Length: 123
Image (cartoon, rainbow, N blue to C red; front, side):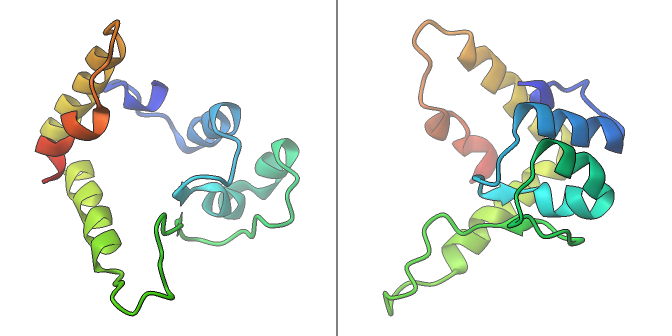
């Protein structure tokens, strides 16, 4: 919820500290720990001592559904999904609307499917 607040624009140290406090895991499609380790390895290692985290100046994106053994599988679907996220991130008005919708949906007694609600901003 913190990072979806439209007023959340932390400096780098705060962003890393918050990530380590609220999301201290490699188990994400977008793993920021290699990048944060490259920027401040001591801070990351003080919270997560995992030798699999290799400091490097890049995002680490894990393909959620890579079917390399399937000859009909292509990376295009995942690439296009990532591009839609990038377009949304670059459109401040739409991003604010999507974040507000997420917050409002979380307040519902029976929330709607976020995958369905977010479609207008990602299609």
